Image (tube, rainbow, N blue to C red; front, side, top):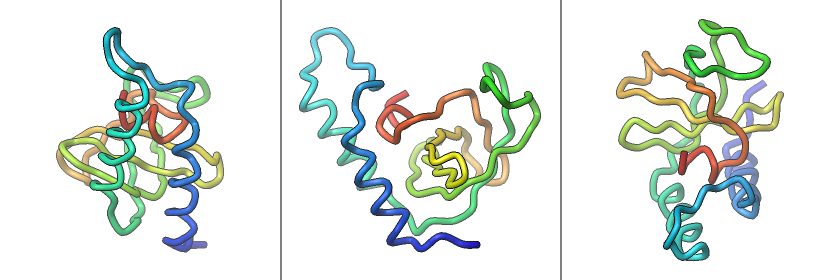
Length: 117
């Protein structure tokens, strides 16, 4: 069953409070970095659509290389595709220049972690 775009937006916005996994390099101001990442996602938001990617190296703990992951793309820019998988209630980062040929390299969790990976 398709998800309501407003519900996906609510999930994304609520997820912005999860910052523990975000890597912040030495010398960077944490709050500013997080705020910039949130604004970057908001600027890249799109109307949600189903997106698919093949699992590639380095892979995921419970997925096989070559499997396909599917979810709702909620933001994308410059080869980054932020995708929400509702059954697992997690975000994935897919990479690639064409939505027909994306790879999932093992980045999943909260939205900010995925976007900044």
